[in-house]
Length: 216
Length: 229
Image 1 (cartoon, rainbow over the protein chains, first blue to last red):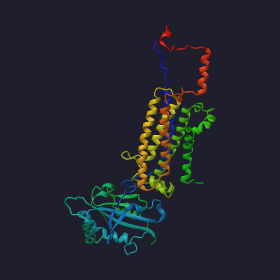
Image 2: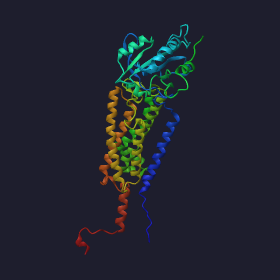
Image 3: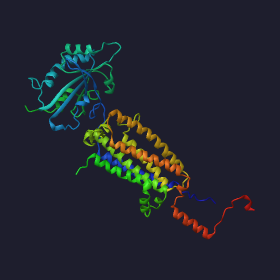
Image 4: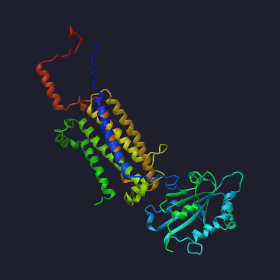
């Protein structure tokens, strides 16, 4: 006759597993239900990744870190804060040169000189900044360096700071597929527009719709 | 009334301090009071396991809280949920994107802590429930090895705090719980097989059973081969 297996050695382990699993998953459920984390990435709704380097502001090279300028407690209807339009470009790229000639003169006067005749009104405590990040698409064949950036700014009459990213460190983090690529970033660091994932509209259209208007 | 982060941390320390006290020689009195409900606390093994369970539970809750802060920091900014008083500044550590996840795997450290303490709790509960089972030694070995691995991670995180220039009180609490739990596993491993381990029942119950056996005059095994003939 076959003996009945009366071993109960698995009981302690199974009981323990059940107790611990209940505690673990109940805790995890609580965390999942009470938090809604925003992850760092380069898509719309993501927190913008690090963007830092030396920036030519027209007179000197200074260190710049985009994250230092974010206000994580910013609220959408507060009428405050600084919006950033980031352009990843290459000083040698034809499309970037074309944009610098055809689009930027108008947009500079519209967004960077809001009090001017062509300026778009924004609330009193809201500002808009442009930042160009000069990357190197073909580091082995095209000319790069700080002087290239300075010449580009002068030649195309660009009125905003340019970051030297000729080592492509920021380009890699931001996963830039080509130039020019545009991003609009809200004052809290959340990406509102990313041209690599949205070609149906331009960054200028999104700026028009997202950035609040001031009193006329 | 909203409690600040340091006051909330106090609640995680309660089971840790309780567990440490129970594991220490000072906890004998407390254990004998509690033994009416949990008889195994009368033994050193029971006290150690009970204390370790409380400590690891504290480690688990503080890890879960750390994960919650990590998520909230991503959502709304770290400074809102974690106090920043001088060198004890958990927001600068938990909110630091360079250091707040495990290398290669990318899991937040809070989640790593939750998994580790959950595993510890399972090892402890199963050993406590069946101290004479054949797998007990394996569980104790897993516990000690995991403890050593965790201590290595603690050193890495201490380096991270040094690099950031701030100390995270939540992380430190989890580290303390881990070190105590590791010590507990080593203690249990050294206890295993000795008289301190017992046979799964308190000493007085054990001696009562022996006395009963003697009275009945049970079978006495021969001590030398010649006695068998």
